[in-house]
Length: 383
Image (cartoon, rainbow, N blue to C red; front, side, top):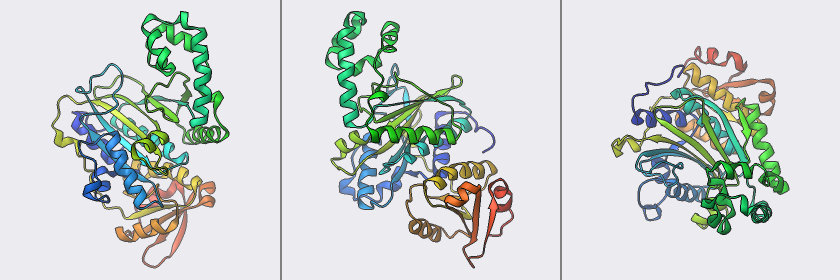
């Protein structure tokens, strides 16, 4: 965990990404499939759409907590521009049923960990927001007016398409069009109060986790019209990884699932597949029996908990946790099923004090440990 894995092939990248995702609480999509009757499982290879349908069905059947899933696809449904789907594989992450900003932050943290440990350093994450339906309508009206006024300044290749869909301008790579849009309206200036509050929460959490980011008004144009979108820029070109991006797709998920209570965030890492066998696209994370279970109570504890998981992963200490759980009971039930010897408990007070309670599962004896001393202390406890 302290050193990058051997970067031998796309197959090794898929395995690596599965291991890291599992550490942050994501499950293979095959496990999610088992919670859905066979007659309700979408046919075909796993993709953004099929995994969204599965995760939404699983969430509706047990709506207390979001569903965290990962998948690998040899035929991505939304590939980066200028790449053929035949050349590209996809490692996808889904958090379905998470309406708050923790969904975006958990995805970003997991993406950073996957890429950094692989050796593909992340220079920054670019972020933009289109907001909810009302926000989008206001922005689209302003954008359409701007495009009509500046139609003569558009490149010929864009004029016809922009007249039908003003958002298509954001996919244009022509420098003249890009320069034009620098003077155009900014989507974040048209956000509703609810959308503005959500975006503010996401940015504050990103800052707290120390992830480098910048606002990018031109990061737009996804036909799924995400409420919030992000893209990770690599520090240098990688032999395997091509691109990483994602967003919050609430309206799109509701459209393809026909369920009003669906919604969530998704992200993809695209890589050169180099013709690898399809068997590698059903990744199973390495099984490491954890001796501790990390319980978090409240949003502040979950955010601070991401740092704790980072710390334990770097120290090589296996830990089980459920960042998707919203209450105490399912976390305690999960810990009991896994037969761990100790619980790590963090609430709002501990998050503020940067401490954690360590409780024995056998006799309920407990002690408070500072986070800086946690990995060393855990290595001394007896299973």
